[in-house]
Length: 157
Image 1 (cartoon, rainbow, N blue to C red):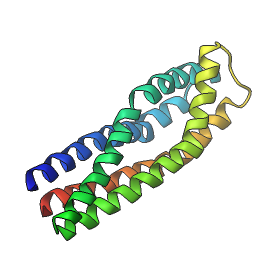
Image 2: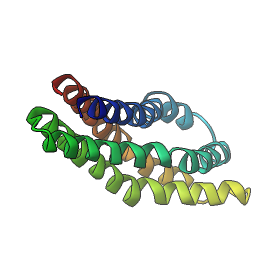
Image 3: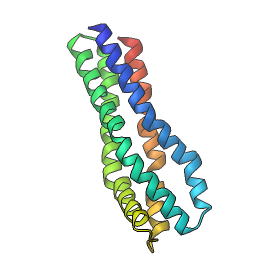
Image 4: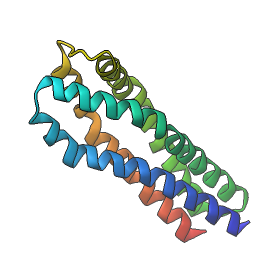
């Protein structure tokens, strides 16, 4: 059972690291770069990035959340209490991430994607991007915490 927990927590780490890296890139590189372009470039670049990312990254986000929850459950079933607590903390953080993504980021992604595909620039392009930017640091934190917790879970199993 220990090997199974190690595999599941390893998968959780890898899946969530993809999302973490994407959001860190968004916070450190993408945000200031997009601030330096005009509204048309913002709409086209971010709209098409979101179009591709929302389609491709969902499997990592959902898979990472499921793997974190399974880690907590398996660790609890086998009496690995530190790993249980760490897996539960990771799961709670990832659920919070999903809520923020769904309520704030996803509507912006959808609006910018629709505008980019239609080759139009919304009047509120900067406001949309500002709303997306307003939660990126929190999203990074909500990915950092589970990655650290999952590393603890792996070390403690």
